Image 1 (cartoon, helix red, strand yellow):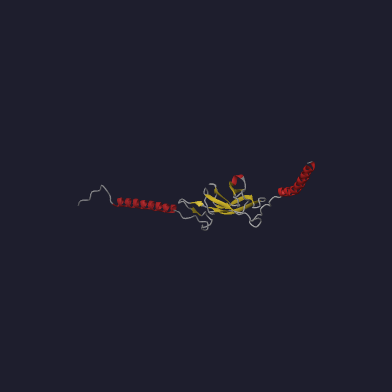
Image 2 (cartoon, one colour):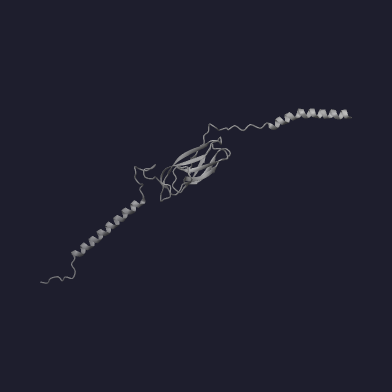
Length: 199
């Protein structure tokens, strides 16, 4: 009886010794991290849906090839708190899109939309920019070029309806002056209160 027990114990020990190394090896093996399909051949990008907005208008800023599920900060002209426009969240493929508003006090002219965030490898901080031209908002609801800007003449302001109004006012004033002068001339030619002479 004792021999049978001892034999079973030895067989179990041998089996445990054979199985244990394989189990330990399987437990320590981990899957290799996925290979970046874009890095380093695809740098991050930034773009806008409107390159000629006016101050106070909202535009869409978008980008690709940023660190997946990371944040991208958007600025106007300068990377600081005073020029901060918003923070976008990149999706799992590194794409982001965000609506930002051009500050109402932005002067007309060329400006730069700046995006700051991690590159696709999620290790390097990258900065990308896109030039926009802030236009003058016209009274009719559209944007008109600022003097010297794209689409404008050599420093000439665009012609507006105000020029016509001024011309009509001057013409009306001249007509009134002419009519008054004519009326006074007729009164002087016809004396009043005199009796015709009798022979």
